[in-house]
Amino acid sequence: MENKNATPYKVLARKYRPDNFDSLIGQDALVCTLTNAIALNRLAHAFILTGVRGVGKTSTARILAKGLNCIGLDGNSDATMHPCNQCEPCKSIQLGQHVDILEMDAASHTGVDDIREIIDGSVYRPVSARYKIYIIDEVHMLSKNAFNALLKTLEEPPEAVKFIFATTEIRKVPVTILSRCQRFDLRRVPLDLLITHLSKIAAAEKINTEPEAIRLLAYAAGGSVRDSLSLLDQASALGSNDIKLSVVENMLGHANADGLLDLLQSCLDGDIQTALTSLKNAVDSGAEPEQIISDLMDFIHQASLIASNSLIEEISESSKEKLVLLAKFDIPRLARCWQILLKGHQEIKAAPRPEASAQMLIIRLSYTSAMPTPSEILNKLPAAPSPIDDSPKPNNSHNSQPNTPNNLQQNNSETDNLPGTTSGPDDLAVNNGATITALTHDMSAEHPSDMTAPIATSPIIAPDTLSNANSQTRSSSFENLRDIAEYCEQEGALILASDIRNHVELVHLEACHLEIHLVKDASKDLAGKIAQFLNSRTNQRWMVSVSDKSSSLTLQKTDEIAKQEKLSMAAEHPIAKKVLEIFPGAAVTDVITPIENEMPSSSTLLAETDLIENPEPDIFPEHSDKPKLSDKKEKMYDA
Ligand SMILES: [Zn+2]
Image 1: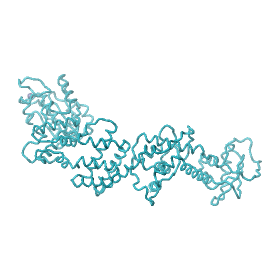
Image 2 (image 1 turned 90 degrees about the vertical axis):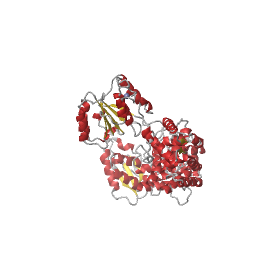
Image 3 (image 1 turned 90 degrees about the horizontal axis):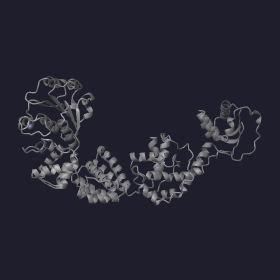
Image 4 (image 1 turned 30 degrees about the horizontal axis):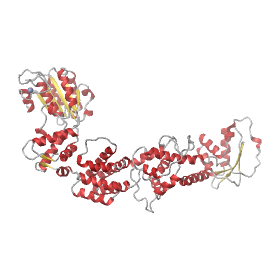
């Protein structure tokens, strides 16, 4: 853009700077408001114009200055929205020579002294114009003191003084200033308007153009008229007044759009070799890897819009045919591409060798597109059985507190087994959740919740003399060892609870007598501690005796066995079987009961979040040495 033409002629951006509101394109709302304000004579003392660079802020300020001071050809006309550009004030303002119109660039005059000059000058009446007008560009650059000095003048402005401020960063302008200004927001100029504008100017300048070249120039200008004209200048110089698409593509560092669309098509077809060749061609032709990926994202975006039947103006005719072909890959697949490209684009910026990084990205993209989307997996699976129980039991191992690393790991394992589920949030997640719901309902129906009850022990003589008939019967709710362990937890005796879970096997439990067996590494006084705890908390006299042998297991062992059974049952489920078949190397690592039936479970959402952050599929699922996906995750969280 800095490549202003070396030839002595006036650059297009200056030559075609609008000199009245009719030639200011894309700002209809602003023109309408200003017209009304002038017609009703409700002009503020200060205006602030804001918008991105090159949309016409300075032009608007000058046209406004002319309109306010125009006296018309008869020399008697009032302020107008249509300055004549013929009268003396109009002409001298146009040339920037009018003594009462002062333009200042705040970027280079930020100090309070610069403002002081203005303030001092503002008390004098205009020399020849109707209004003395101060145009301050980039006003947000003024220092705090300068703003404060200006504020006083804005509070009580002299009769014949107007201020016109322009800024690209309205947020940096103090509210005290803003509240004293009439604010106008200049919009980015829409693409079709820019295209028309550029075409007209190219015709007037006798520059030959290809429509697609003009479209690309306008697109690259991002809504800025000045940028679009600078680009037109640059392109016409490069192409010696003949602007071809290839010239513009070259100039902007874009690869040939056709070639990129073919590249994308190869990726989505899973044809890695052809895709890499296309990438090499694009890079060889001078396109920047980062720009290539950015262009690919644009195409995915456009194809997705086509796939969702949204009308978009930005699609060029020549690309349309290929984009329609791309759109035939369904939206989940396109959304997955977008995420991979988005992440890859950030990586390329940081990569020491952008080209290598781009190649890796293309390989990843091609590989993933061959993977089934979640909906395709579900279609391949046998129909899920309807849930047996509509009110799932709350399950401690999976609750609504997903923030412990342990939980994260468990929740992730659900999708670890489905590496294809890398697409973005879509309704499929709900289906996914439903399938898993069905699976776990089967499980929970047979949840061995009372496996802790003692298995037929040999009869024991229980001396019942210590039981206290008057005590509150907390003990009556202890049906098994798990109840006691949970009671300890409730009461805050966490170490004791953990000792009970890990080191105690139940022999017998009745009334206030607990007979236990201690496993090898249990501390010797554990029985005493349990008795002491129960005595103090239940208001009952407890007898805890230790037996040499036992026929039950510790709670911890019982839970482990129950989990293993759950897992192998889950793996035997027809849906799980099919999933394991589709993804070799996958394993069932956990069974989770969703909390809500109709919503995707929190675990599903979590898993999705994780996938959005890490949309990398595993590239070599069939590799035998490959660690299980869940192993990788564990390491990640350990680190
Ligand atoms: Zn005039």
